[in-house]
Amino acid sequence: MKFNPFKELNKFEKNLWFISVSTILISYLCLGGSDCLTLTASLIGVTALIFVAKGFVIGQVLTVVFSVFYGIISYFFSYYGEMITYLGMTTPIAIMAIISWMHHPYKGTREVAVHKVTKMQLIVMILLSLITTIIFYFILKAIGNANLFVSTISVTTSFIASYLTFLRSPYYALGYAANDIILIILWILATIEDFSYFPMIICFILFLINDLYGFYNWIKMEKRQNNT
Image (cartoon, rainbow, N blue to C red; front, top):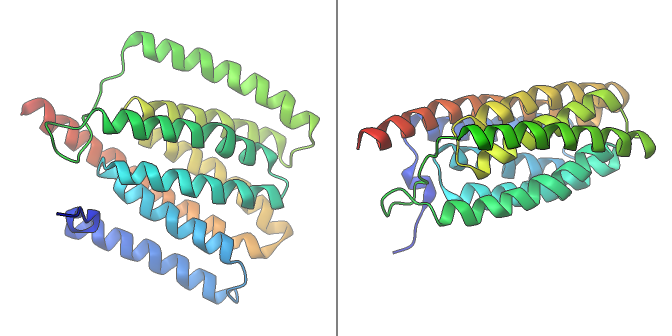
């Protein structure tokens, strides 16, 4: 029997997904519907998030697809930091997360088993985040990345979020929520120069809402799994 992840969504999750998709489509049509790449990336992104929030591996698969699209979009606006981050860091870690999640299902279900981050894993995350931030700052500065400071912070939040996703921690969602806020700022700056990027602002506002729900749902998952 084939697995249909949409059937596993509750009423609230279906409404959240429908509102997110509808909002993206409306904003796209209001701007003349000329940027199909941005539209496609946004639709894949919000769909990925709702399934990641459920702890389904399909969410990570869609995250990989979104990362590729987003990396291409970032390249066109000279956000090389975003491009390098998503293609060189987020995508590989998402692929690793797919493998990790597939090997850690919760009691034979399609839901991933929630993991509590250890002190050593937390220390490793902090050290790697610092190293990644410093390296990327000088790389982005050398290649003339637009909005250098904000882009560098985005690298840090992206790494933390990806690392926690790989570890199957509920706090991955707070990492992505922080990254969403940074990206909203980045794309506001981009939209000031080219209004066609306005849908990306809408996209990451919706991402922020979905990620906050993801944190809420993963905390519920963690409590339920621990009690069981």
